[in-house]
Length: 225
Image (cartoon, rainbow, N blue to C red):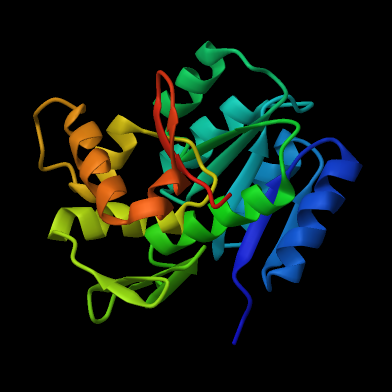
């Protein structure tokens, strides 16, 4: 089977190699670009790129400009890398249609986890039927959850919420993003409804509830201690 292609655009050769090594190990085919112009050339030249990782600060068109042009042509998932911690940069990226935003320095394993999650959400990767983490086994096919081998009863939304957390390990997820992904844009109430569901979910999964960590001012993160 042909490898899923991912384009990484960054002017730092060491960064490209680091990302390339980890994604190649995961089984992806990686295409590299050293600046904005080369990124656009590769995007137009190769018509089956499944995901793009863009650095903000690049010679020629920067990451935002490259993203703007790509978004005018395609809905391909985009992850933006930046050395900046400025919230305005993140907001600008999301306004342009960036799917994920990762600040340098970052863990390559976290980047790979986000790549996998994004490709699953965009139906490029088949979603795993069973997800396991820290003694929790979630089976999507049978819609069941076990904790250390014991069955746990969850409501439909609690199940979907836990599945979303487990599919995005160590990723800080805003309440709005959780609503958009788990409630599929069909909920128009207060995003704080997430807090109520998280509280119930934590209590039902007992000591494993500590895996769902609060990210103050944003939302939640699933992280196995």
